[in-house]
Every structure is written in structure tokens, then in C-alpha cells.
Image (cartoon, rainbow, N blue to C red):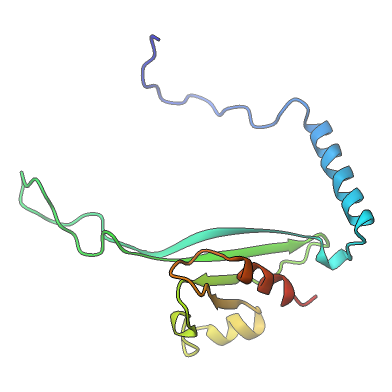
Length: 151
């Protein structure tokens, strides 16, 4: 094909030519859904989930030059949780939900952790265990997030 690995020299096009039509269609679908299903304004939210790694396993260590295998403790371990964030259509930032792997509350941050009280009482963060062996969100944690929102 005559290709070679090349470095980027400028950003790719990010905005489609028909952006006005795309946004108009999205707004009309939103209006239709809200009016047809009588969605109360506080329930019109946008949310997303992301994995947060706060202690990655080690990827490097000192080892003899020429060694073929280098063992590192913790290479296969990750300390990660899922963070659910949301915002209402009125612009209110919703409390964060942090989801940890585990089947009991013992997998959650301890209540005597630094700033735990501020996070849970002032900022209304929610710490939940997934009730599984992963930190992934489940239908139960998503339902909990929606049911516990206070506007």
C-alpha cells in the first residue's frame, strides 16, 4: 500500500458538516421523550461512568542488564473503582457514586478515612460495593444511584 508510520501534523476534523442538523434532531428527540413520557425535570440527567485507578501495579524495577525475564510484584494487580458522575438538565452537578469490587461494605473506604465525612455528608458522595468480584457498575448500582438522588 506504500504506507509508513507517520507522526500527526494536525488534528483531525472533529465537527461534522451537518452539526446543526444533528443537534436539532437530538433536541427534538429529547423534547418528544420528555413530553410523551411526562418526565419530571429533575429526572432529566446525563451521567457517565469511568474507571479510576488509584494504585496501578508496578511496571518497572531495577534488574541485571541482559536479563530475559524481570519479575515485578504487583504487575498483575490494580486498585480501581468505577466512578458514576451526573448532571441534571438544570445544571446541578449530582453527587458522585463510587463503586468498589466486593460483596460486603468491608471493601469500601473506611469511615475514619481523611475527608470521608466531608465526602459523604457535605458532598453527598455514595460509596457502594458492586456485590460482585469486579468494580464494574451493575443494574443494581445504577438503580441505587437513580433512586437515591435528592434534588
